[in-house]
Picture: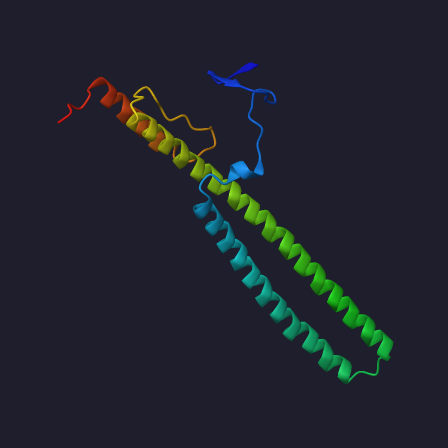
Length: 166
């Protein structure tokens, strides 16, 4: 089955003319993309650890000081500490969820940059192999659109005026 998609024919089964997206396809330049995602994730974990430490030292220690000199029953004090623990655990869980969302967003953003570089490298490799009709075609939301247009213009210029071989 051949499906037309933006002027190109694609063989195989596709969904509404678009290639099915897979998580493994997000990593076009794994070394670059994984390093950035890991850096952001580790920075977030450091921030979360500092947040937890500050929370514990300030809030829990302050409560401890107040409870030490209060005449509240021990079960009420234990209940307050339980509430503090629940609040701290909830805060940590929310932080981890937000951190994972940011890491996924960073992965998508690096995919848009890496995808552009990947496609431009493929075109350069094709031209080096002798296919001078190859051109860079990026997706609408990919980065480096202006560079791709300049590269296509350079290829067209070279195609019109070939450089003599020495």
